[in-house]
Length: 503
Ligand SMILES: Nc1ncnc2c1ncn2[C@@H]1O[C@H](COP(=O)(O)OP(=O)(O)OP(=O)(O)O)[C@@H](O)[C@H]1O
Ligand SMILES: [Mg+2]
Image (cartoon, rainbow, N blue to C red; front, side, top):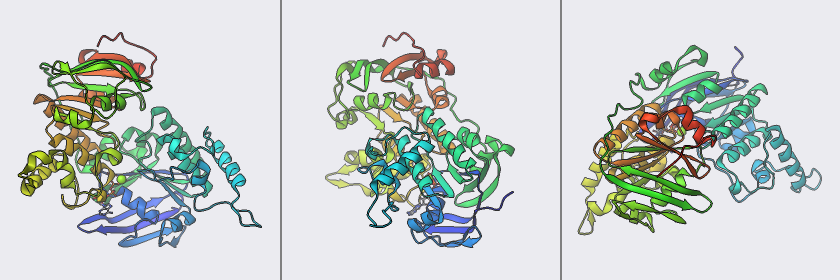
């Protein structure tokens, strides 16, 4: 085996009340894709942030090409050849692709020292071409899709001649075609001899694209090895110290009276003619590729977006929400896909986040019942296995997956009758995923109606009583549990095949 380009020994990082990293070892090699694996809060992103000079370690050693390194800031690590594509992309939205790529290392005219825009554009074009991307250097980043933004960050890594490229959950917002693009680029970087660190909660992805793994648990180093020598179950055991029996709950669905009926619902430019119904105790899976219009449909039912046609009926009468508060007042809850933008208030405590939709009921004569509030937060926090130093800490100190759990807990604690979940297990580790599934199944058993929007077919198949499939804003199929067939569902999602639909 070749000498590692980066070696990490006994690395620790303490935050108040939390050992985010506790004695971690990692060897990063050229031409190798290295999976960094662990539950939510295991310390993966913290390690990335240390490697990229965002955090300073509490202890331990990092050497690069044999020399000890001490990055003081992000620029130091960039200069040394380490570049990261973060879990939550951080780019300058109002600037162009070329400006973003050369931010911090603008190309200048040798003589006049003026910024050489022409050269930067040309170089950007070359980089984009090398990655086989059809993006123009002049496009403003705000007009790019999430996938394209990731690709631009990769182009930036190339422009810096990075030796180590780190990808922290790069695929969580990508369509399957975009994921293929990303794989192609990862393979290309690998063949160019780059060392790649790849973080993901999706095992198929890890086994597809990575060569080697290191597992962390509670901030500690657990094991490392070649992926070809292990199974998914081996990895799960290393991650959580046990196997998972059931990823999906055993259910005997029984549905009650009709609660929600959607007829010919349309929104110009987003979706059209969507019809389905939802009964007490039912889980309706909403499948489609990213961008099929599923989120827009549920946002309309929840009163965030306006419909342009069709009707929604709630308990048999017309329901036309003007605002989410109208929907909430009728017992509808929506757990949004984008946890950072719409879900969690980062500068508020975990406890306050969870009890936010409940404030009215926790108030007596204008005073919030703090004790009750804490109780509720603890109860739901434990159900969702939120990992934090305490429920009073701000949400922005939580790991990505744990922020997602706060959002789930918040809406479930509000005691809805109709629970709409948009990609609820995105970025959530395997053990918590199983817990979320169990929780949702139990809620349905208690009579709750659930709409589960998911791009993960196994999740749809494992959880749903019936499945609606969308393709480019259209409903292409509505299947009963007895008719569920993964190939058929996939073909309907790709728009290759349509079932006759009568809402
Ligand atoms: N700035 C901070 N202040 C306090 N605690 C922090 C801070 N950043 C991270 N932590 C804590 O460190 C631990 C590790 O978090 P980290 O973000 O590294 O997890 P992760 O493995 O990336 O998880 P995920 O899969 O959810 O993204 C968590 O318990 C988190 O709450
Ligand atoms: Mg993370």
